[in-house]
Length: 134
Image (tube, rainbow, N blue to C red):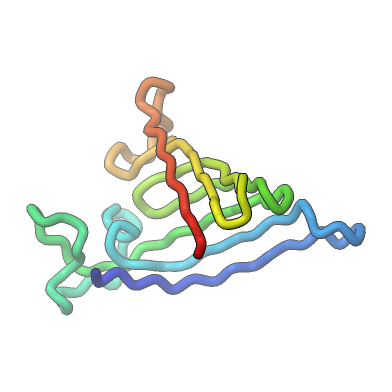
C-alpha cells in the first residue's frame, strides 16, 4: 500500500511513587489513506502515486488527515484507549493473557460519514483483534 504515517508519542508517567503504573500515553499525527477520507479535515491532496489505495471501486486522491490516541496503561497486562482516526472515534481495551499474546476489543462510537454523530446502542460497531509476537 501507499499509506504514510508521521506520528509523535508522549508518555505521562506516574511521578508520585516508584510504581510505574498507571500512566498515560498520547499519540498524535497525520497520515494518508483512511486517515484522510473525511472532507472537512483532509489536506495536502495530490494525484501523485496514483491516489490513495482505500477503495478499488472509487478513485481517492492521496490526502493527509489527523489521528490521535489517548491510552491509559493500568498495568503490564491491561490498557484502555480512546482513538480518533479521521474516520471514526473508538474506545477499547487490550489485555495480555500470555507473554506473547495480546487481545484487543473495542467499539466504534461515531464515524465521519455520519458527521460524527454518536451512534445508538444498536448501531455501535464492535471489533476485536489479536496479535502474537514471535
